[in-house]
Length: 273
Ligand SMILES: [Zn+2]
Image 1 (spheres, rainbow, N blue to C red):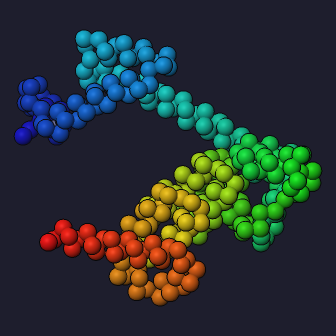
Image 2 (image 1 turned 120 degrees about the horizontal axis):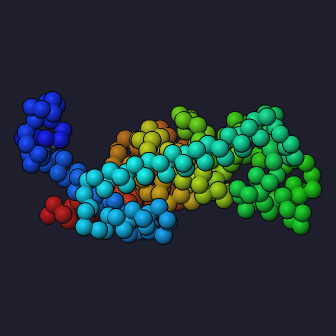
Image 3 (image 1 turned 135 degrees about the vertical axis):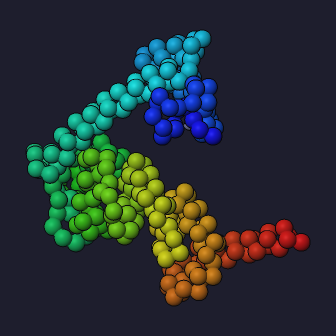
């Protein structure tokens, strides 16, 4: 059916205003209901409650929705600007080493200067390590070591602590190291960022390593995603040469895989009976 809204035809040749296609109709309904729900869930802010009054009135429709979308866009611009302001300042302080007061030593490669205040603010674990009354050696000294990280990995970790952003297209091994670090040093925002990237990239080729890292970092989301992939491609994964080495290191996970495979097999047998 042709549509008075999305038709490629010039406006003057279009159908009358009551001819609207199903996708436009459904889309309009969904947008209005989404915006109404958004208001109900989040109407304590001043901007929101103002729009909310308007949308709950008798004239709610696409025109009000459009007004609200514009306000949302303005709020997003504002948020982006604030994020950029904060990010640029912190990134500059780190990259140009402005008044740094500690150096962090990776397992390999040169140490990296940083700010105690930023480390302590981003991680309870670092705060404890840096606090004067802790028994950790980092307390009063001007350096401390994260020997499990390479220079590049440490640099990525610090960069995230300053800016809240991960570089695009990071190699998997770096994401693995960052996820383990996020768990160890208790940085939930970094954990979620790594989990999302790794979960999106799970495939039979890398699933065993992902499962191992998920287990190591107590990441339930990633673990579940990896387990599903193992079950889905069981033959390919279990008969791969990597599985031999994996089994030596991860007896517990192998038991879990065996049980999950059997459970899956039993459920398919019962359902086909
Ligand atoms: Zn349409």
